[in-house]
Image (cartoon, rainbow, N blue to C red):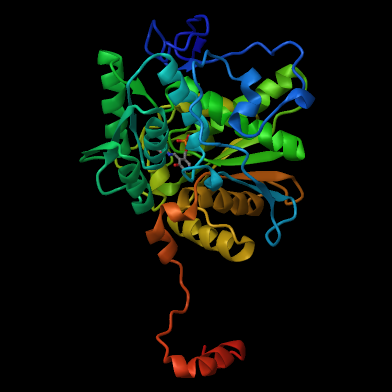
Length: 396
Ligand code: F0G
């Protein structure tokens, strides 16, 4: 494991989460396993790739996460694919990381886990902790979590701690608790073991279509874009692929510290005190993993794109109405970013591109209901009149 801040190196050890020397972020660097071959892989989902996931696991806490469909676009662009992570057990990509992190927690004999969250990490942490029979605390920004996600955490029985402030305040509280006390196991993505599960998104894409030109990822706390890049990079080191896709991060206008830094050619982001966007999942001003995300974007010769809230909601509708895919606003940001990148000449429409649709639309019923459609109070005896009128365009 190598520290991104001070360069300290330490052997891979599941007990280690932050740099023992300076408290910085650690990268887990694995040696390509000898004799690794795709044809020997067994099973489906995250643990199909267990030979590439380091660590010792006393028991595996799994709810059959991963193995999500890579759906080819039917009506937007034939070279476009959607990796629909909304079809994970709790409806987001977080489950891939949670199976590894909660299995680690159990193997290390932790009885309690904690996570700060904009909602999806919380739902996933609560579910996997429940499955493991351990207690979960989740720290949420009060009033800023989409209803479906909050309701999931309630259902799975997490203890919910709400802070008056943004996700960044909640995150800082969890980090301080972990640094000072170490009594609870942290399930946020500063824990590099979680990203070991999330990197399997890359493995699945590669098994489905090989290496695309571009992978577009909505960026919040900034772990996932790095995890996916890491997955491709490991395949490159093993010699299974001969190039890594360009990693393109998308952030919302009101919460875009990393995209701003990339676009302006800066080496460090300027953090944002009061982030704001309809895409509450990525409403983050101080992304913990900014160093990792910027590394993934730069080393893959990728870039970042900023989209507005109205572009996000429009993209959410387009995805639903042109492709039949329901994704939450943060995920739709990937499509908004793709359309912008094509318009700006950053991506050519003939380039094979994968959008990571990180979470299901059902997570956020309020955002779905904002889309315009006709709702007509009908007399059931006269319903045919309305239908005929609609078909013939008389009612508009
Ligand atoms: N999309 C969705 C639906 C998310 O929930 C998140 C992050 C992201 C994208 C961004 O991923 O943080 O790895 O850059 N949600 C976290 C949470 C912050 O608490 O659920 P990232």
